[in-house]
Each structure stands twice: as C-alpha cells, then as structure tokens.
Length: 91
Image 1: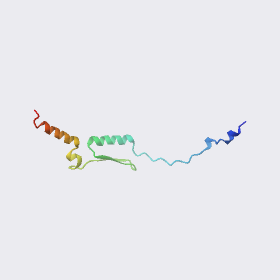
Image 2: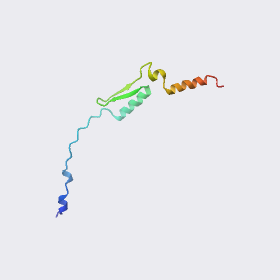
Image 3: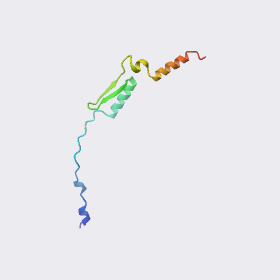
C-alpha cells in the first residue's frame, strides 16, 4: 500500500526540459588551428586570423621591406651586435 508521502513526490521521469537550440556546425577544429599556428610561426607569418563563420584560417605575412622581415627581430639584432663585437679584436 502506497504511503501518502509517495503520492506527493513528483515523478522525475515525466519532467520535460525545454528544447535546446541546435548546435552550430564546427567549422574548424582546435587541432587544425594549432597546426596552422605552428606552420605560420615556422615560415615567418606575422599572425593567423580565423573566420568562425566560414572556418577560413588565414596567415598574414609582413610586407617585403617593412616590419620584422626588413629590420629583423630582437634576436637578429642581438646576433649582429654580438658578431660585431667578436670581430673588433678581443684577443
């Protein structure tokens, strides 16, 4: 015989949740983005841009004669200075 407390408990199996909105299609994966970032860094790209609507991954390169390609980065400048000091006769 059911007790009165059993009858007052709501039945969880009959609860309905509001429908969730449909998920968007994944246009690119994290793995693809990581690969593109590593490749861009290896070939000297300035930055990587991603268009989430289309999934397009673009690598942006510095213009020739401008930016890091022309003047070099800090490491290149340090190496030039170091080599210049080495040739000034530290014997």
